[in-house]
Length: 360
Ligand SMILES: [Zn+2]
Image 1 (cartoon, rainbow, N blue to C red):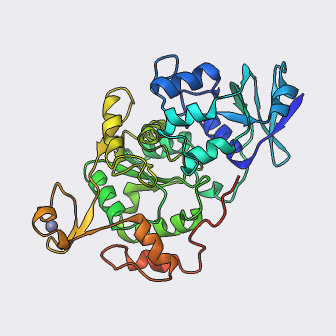
Image 2: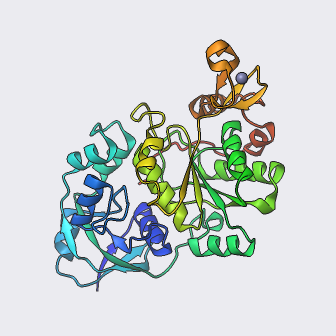
């Protein structure tokens, strides 16, 4: 049988399809599906699905595999699954980028990633055979596992939290708000391929270990990473992240400020607006929260919904920005305790904090 060797991030896409993390997808999208998702944020069946999930390959491989009924998919010399190809097609990447990301600017990391992919896409159902053991696998749960844990713990309402950062106080605030009205909290940081300057998976894992073990009732919080790559597609990716968490068994999902955004490409609350368009269709409730900040007068973390000082005493407000936090940590300086817990900073000692090279 013909074979196709997968890169790590292609393997991770296959694995997520195999886990059911991208349900209702049962394979890589064919041309109609990519077109439908790009144009309408829906699969041809009408189900909401905002981003393409594709298998890219070179023109040579597309030519070589054309006509094969089944293609064995390998990763690191191990057969991990197979594809029954329905079609091979050459996407118009600039047009696709403009629809998905709102720009075809190659400085946008999601666009750059799309442009770096193979010239052709192969679509068709897959069979997932074997889970590869990666360094982050011990920290990753499958949807079957999380659903079982939620049931064992008797949780009926579970709030999912997406992140790609070491937790600071604003994240913690959002998690506590979610937890106050849910049976359980599922913190699921995304640790697949990210961009240079993003936190390493180990830093995020260590930081959350310190937060959850030190400051949350452990029997009300579950932690597991999600190894898929950041698309940086802003509002569309917020919908995608919600669908994924529904598939893991969450009943609610927190969408904060500039969810999955990058630079100034998306409006601060564009993800709130887009998710609202699909209310009642996603199979998961979206909890839309404002971006928390530290207020000196309130003497704590608050939002513009709970603190009146944004207008009257703007100097009392300290925005908590992940970018500022990263700059401080890069310089070896510690953010103030009201911004990031000292115990979390301590937990990071000796860890490589930031991604220095983009993995392919
Ligand atoms: Zn205040």
